Image 1 (tube, rainbow, N blue to C red):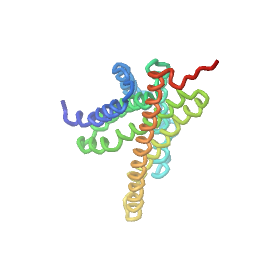
Image 2 (image 1 turned 180 degrees about the vertical axis):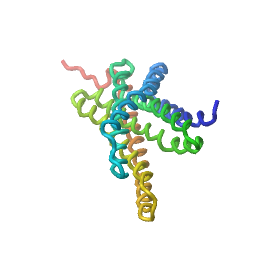
Image 3 (image 1 turned 180 degrees about the horizontal axis):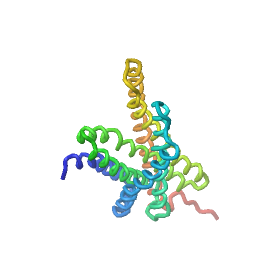
Image 4 (image 1 turned 120 degrees about the horizontal axis):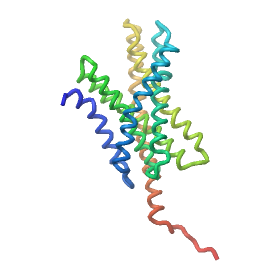
Length: 252
């Protein structure tokens, strides 16, 4: 097997294992997880079609690298990819009997998003001239980014599942927050790479890179905090199932 191909899928596999091990209380069946992962792989197709349609009917303006980066990051990539991830995620797991605790939303969302990231990563790595360099950079940045977008999506999807009174609000948040994170991530990268090179622009690119690093660190903090929060809620759900009479009082 080609080393470039292995390097493209390795970060995906590591993150799949990471989130699977975080599901401590009632792990999901591997068959359902694989189905969700392959749904994420297929998600590349409608997302790419939507991106192509947007670029055809509403192309970015010429000679406007800042506006183009923002437009492409938020509208073309962020909106198309996160919308279809959420649609397929809802289709695969919303009514599933296995979606029965808070942490499940994060598990299934990350498996689907990493399926998407796996196909995207293979395409970028295998088509590039510097395959190993591309694999390294995307393994450190792009694949974990898709993972973190999914953590936020799954977090709010679980809140929508188990909090019917706020369902519409949480479903909206399950789309808008990953979209904004995805758009910001892409826009910072695209603007910094689309600018032409001179001293002033180099300073701007340096500032953008610093902002990107800060944003990436904050994404990890947001994601890990929400993983821990839903782990605690799942622990409470498991305890309630195992001790159904705890807190019961006789009322004569």
